[in-house]
Amino acid sequence: MLLCGIVDKLEKMSVDTRILAYFFCQATEVRLNNATAVLHGLIYQLLDQEPSLIGRMRKKYDHAGKKLFKDANSWDALSKMLINILEEPSLQNTYLVIDVLDECETDLNQLLHLIIQLSSSSRAKLIVSSRNWQHIEEVLDDATQKVRLSLELNQNSISAAVGKYIEYKVDQLVRSKRYDSATRDAVQQHLVSNADDTFLWVALVCQELKRHKKRPTPAWLTCHKVMQSTFTVNYA
Image 1 (tube, helix red, strand yellow):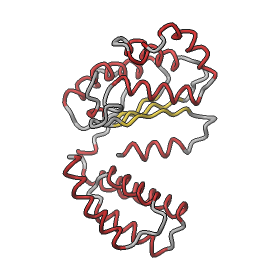
Image 2: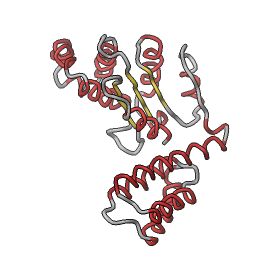
Image 3: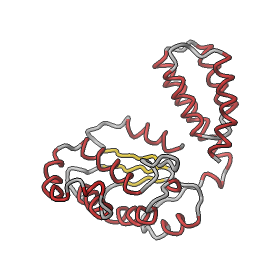
Image 4: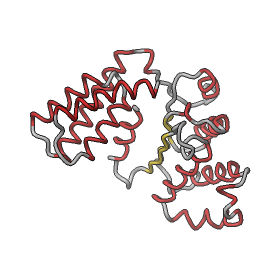
């Protein structure tokens, strides 16, 4: 989950200088595994950050009513709405982040072609991630402006990136949970030893640590070490 770290960094930028909308696809969740859901999520976040656009969008799309969200043609209306929003002069520095494209199981092709269109026709900066699926790579190769980064081509780069992500997440926990030095070292060592170069596992364990009211004990950390092997099997 490299994009989790990227989103964290972008969120730290001043809201006066950037607009950020992101969506994390998940194949096992019907609300997160289709292209229409991606547009719903992005549009909602953009309008939430730029409420002045709501009135203008409402005038254009009020006639569609609930069909905009349920009708078979909702993709056309939503994609046009997203394009119109991104054309607004007030959105000068906009970032759209879409993670795990390969887990978008419905209308993936439509989403890929919209990404290509937006990459060349809007001012927005798009950041997308996917497993190395040939079909996705072939379609996105048509984008005229792109930078492609393949972490799988360099295992050392992956390990280094995961290590930096662990340091970043542990620093967050130290500040929010007031860990002492011993707890900090124990948590960091646990993450480094068991991450298996997996961003998502690190993110999930840190999420649990943030929710945990007490400082993590050795038994708690051992429990999440067992969870790591189960997670790897389920996610692979």
